[in-house]
Length: 114
Image 1: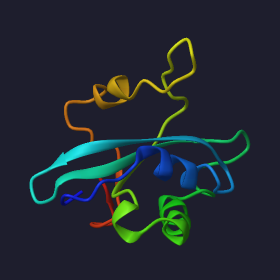
Image 2: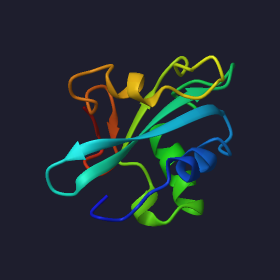
Image 3: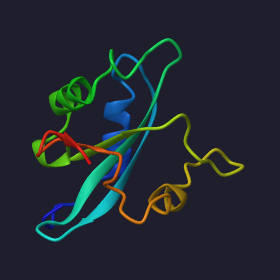
């Protein structure tokens, strides 16, 4: 983001420590102003809902452990994450799900669902 290097593993590690978050993946999203923004895909634990584990809660908790420029701008809930046979997250599949990866995401900056 804006020339700053952001390790996806660091963002993912911060997200999975949040109560109710089972798994997470962080990927880059093209942005005309900053080059790239961070998008997080989040899988909730069984028994947790989007109403209880809100985007604002997730992102504010992430901000407690991540530098401000590392906090994802976009957040999308998913039922599961695509994986390889060795259980590595297929981030290329996540990025290819939609022509515009911002669609269906919470935008932390504009405070709207895209």
